[in-house]
Image: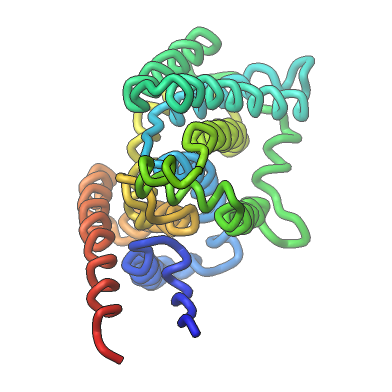
Amino acid sequence: MAKASPWYRRLGGGALPAILLLILMLGIYAAYEPSALTSFGISNLLNNAIVLALAATGLTIVVLTGEFDLSGAGVVAICNVMAATLSTGAPGSMGTFGLVLLVGLLVGAINAYLIAMLGLQSLAVTIGSLIVCQGIALVLLPAPGGEVAEAIISAVTGDLFGIPIAGIMFVALALAWTFLKNTRWGIAVYAVGADPMASRLSGLNVPTTKFIAFVLAGLCYGAAGFVYSAEIGSGDPRISDSFLLYMFAAVAIGGTSLMGGRGGVLGSLVGVGILTVMQKMLFAIGVAEFYTNIFNGLIMIAAIFFGQLSPLVARIARRRPA
């Protein structure tokens, strides 16, 4: 009888070091900030992290197929600007939500067609998409401003029966991925990312698998832009200047291989937690804000190192006689 996989392995390839690091950082943060683990402190952490969690989820799905998607930050920017300029007007809150999801879906579908169907390089295509989205965001709102409907702010940053909405969204992302990765498409995502040629020879539809991944990513980016609008209450067309780096950092820190085929959304959510808690922890300790990027880079390099090391350790353990 096959031995069940450890719970941490189901989070994604190299996620265990990330989980241990997150626990350590939470402990340090709580030691310096007494309110860190109160209901208010936890709610604040979740609200700070949810935008990156949504965006990193979309990016993870694409990376697992062995592709890259740099358009995410641009989609977040344009959807944020749309929410800030439309939600108080005729479309209303729900209409604006539908429009931003449509924009995310459209950008994802265009990327998917060019990459999955026409075979263009994902790096080049999504850089182009990023630049176009940045340009459109600046046309719609040349400078930070606008206003987000109060209904959107309340719905996203509030709570439901005492549970933060952001926390519910985290759980929803985790459950959705747990379901999707066990579907026929989810299994194909890992197979295609690990070896696209072997997947094609075994009968898997590689273009369709990648097409769906890019479309789902676009929807996640659109939702991230909408939630970001609620978090700041206005529009910022230049969010993409730094956001893209944090997206990739969260994915890498969470143990997803940037080569594809290994990792998962749950690990990326842990990576998001690390980046969020680290900023809070450094502030609580008294470290200057401009040192944050240095720590981000070091942690990302360490996470990639341990992520590459863990499969080797697993192979050695499997070869060890019982």
